[in-house]
Length: 434
Image (cartoon, rainbow, N blue to C red):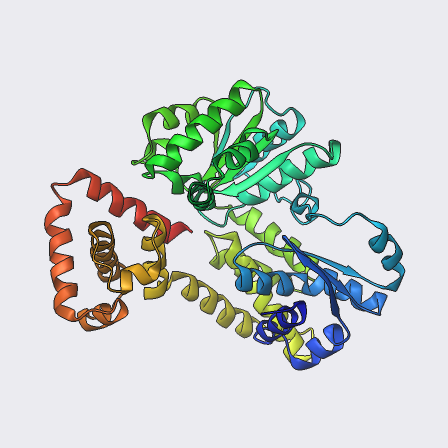
């Protein structure tokens, strides 16, 4: 993709999977890209009505396509001709993702399962580096932990635009550190994180087992804490269950306030379905809201996925009518899709854990660390899928005898090797919760 036009054409192509050609031509036909940099996409449309429809109804489709293209979250801004003077006169710079009105305390739906974490997050936003430092929020994927991080940042940014906020995912922290070491920019890397007024690390569990990353984060944590700066961490599990996390980090994570987020109860799920459907402009009868809430119990993202598919159906049919049979089929598809672990997904997760590429596992690299990762990957494929030995071998570029040898070797070693058992447990958790 050599230009913004190429990017925009790719976005439109990806959106064709969920939106009808009529919807795309009607609302996006005259759109052009004004700006694409950092995490911001700015579009221009000639119609104020189109701007309103794109912003309220289709922004999620655009940002989802951007995430698929670039692997990161994007913020969308839509402008009309009347917005152009202010846009042209403003200083150009990095987009501020913490201005996103979708992720505030007001848009977070509170229930018994998340009330404590919500209250803790609000307290931190009201008084950073106060009583709750660090704040450690944990719970399974898709329950709103990242929403709370953004809500904290949104409130602090609103009160003080100059507040230095740094957000990073645990695996991205490792990747940035590796890049800094390779390019000799360690001091710049450290300055970025150690000068923050608020440091937020999402999925901190991914630094466990990475010696140099833990060393760097230990000193970053100490510098910020001693400077009375706020630290907020999220994870899919409490520190005591991060078996490969260094004790000195575990004790620091636990010395502030720990708040867990549980799957929402029935009443909260109904409220979530109704609220999100309303914001997306989807007219859902009460019995359909109740059906979704009764059948999607563990993951808010599944609810969002179902609503997006319902929205796509409305666009394709050109009608606002939604029947129970359609919702039942969509609900089943979304849940089954999230339960399915593809070989590519498992290989990618094992590769990420070991800080190598998927092609290292499937290629001819024979170094000891890659060979171990490859054997564990084969074992995970056997454990988490219904693939035959031949299919497992083929997925990693090997034959079935290699797959059988790897499975037997891991099975023989795991009972007497505590570190290996911990590694298998961590990777399994990462695959299940990411």
